[in-house]
Length: 169
Image 1 (tube, rainbow, N blue to C red):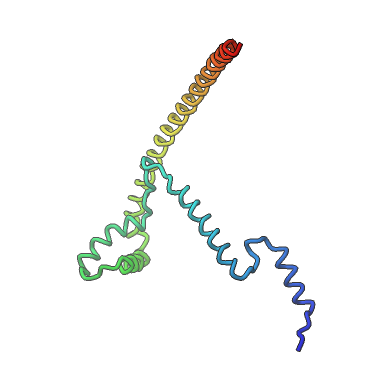
Image 2: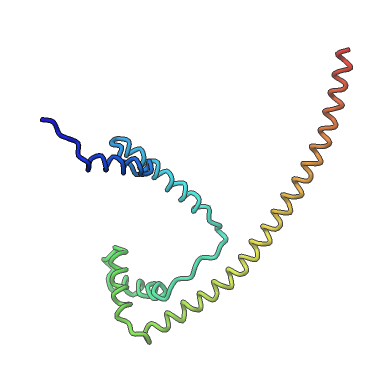
């Protein structure tokens, strides 16, 4: 029995051709495409890993300020519970049950930490700008010195070529 090709199957083929290569169904080759995508993700992660260790850490939110304190009390009350997720769930439930007045001291601490962080970031950014300016100046001066060296070495090479020509005669 022959299966006739209808219009629907040709339309699918045309849409496959119009798609980018990465999105086409290619059978066994599809795994190779996925592997390429995973390599791209790794290179992005490698770029993100180049963080400055001197950069100030972002301040915790009011919830995390609360969670630091809650974690200590929870561990004392439940010494057998080792799972981080259990502490997090209990802390989240407790945070939701707190009223606005009960949350206010944690929010005040978080606001104070945020203002300190902003001050640190201002000083950090100033240091970064000054070091970048110095680096740019150093690179410019090095390139100028290299240009002068190239000019001098070019003159020396011409003299060496003249001596070589004299020896050949």
